[in-house]
Image 1 (tube, one colour):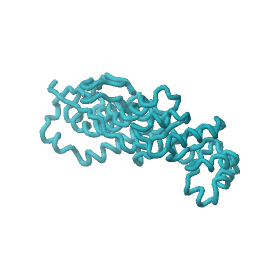
Image 2 (image 1 turned 60 degrees about the vertical axis):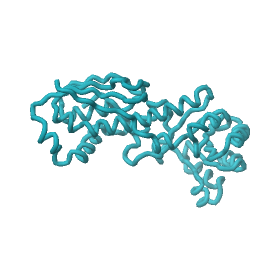
Image 3 (image 1 turned 30 degrees about the vertical axis):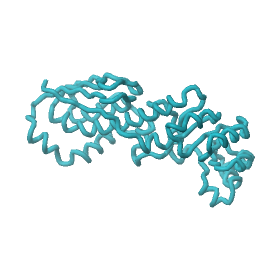
Length: 281
């Protein structure tokens, strides 16, 4: 269908399921209004400055309904484009293109919205040495796509799921009895990456002594973060997390933390204003 591939993501299945949800038994409007042999050309463009993500996926929707459609993708994934930029040009069967339009736009608007917001956070910490991370706060079923979009915006993916690292948080500690005991059990289970959330400085040494390989410094203000980073002394990576906003992230990154994680990237990104305008061929 397309040259686009993403590890762990089945593009054909995604396109088929999305179209089935939207089209159902048929696009009654296009079937009633558009002649079967009508041809349209169309241009997808951005109405605002955005960071692009998802164009090959959008193209897959059009190809699914019109295998003969001619598509020119005019912007690269991760490209920053200005308002009015043309992103895609296509020519094909009018019924098919109009039927696929909403699914294609929904996808590229959502992913470009995430990439655009992510780029703003990345730019805000430029030069600090800290790396922006995303989180698991994603829409169910869309994690691979949403984390792809954060990469297009310049962030680094954190855990893809529960399987690729241990992350010991406050509820794990409460059930295990202590930070030390929770970490000890993860070490005994031979887990290589053991991320431990600490919300107090006095939890740092016990976590490290027990075998933590990464510390998540939760909801700490910049002075506290700076002291925590000094205490850790580079023994493990440090990650600031919790309530990070665009207006606060630079001060947080300047404390010397290795990473800053931001759930807002996928949880709160507005859709990019991208449209598709058709004209008679």
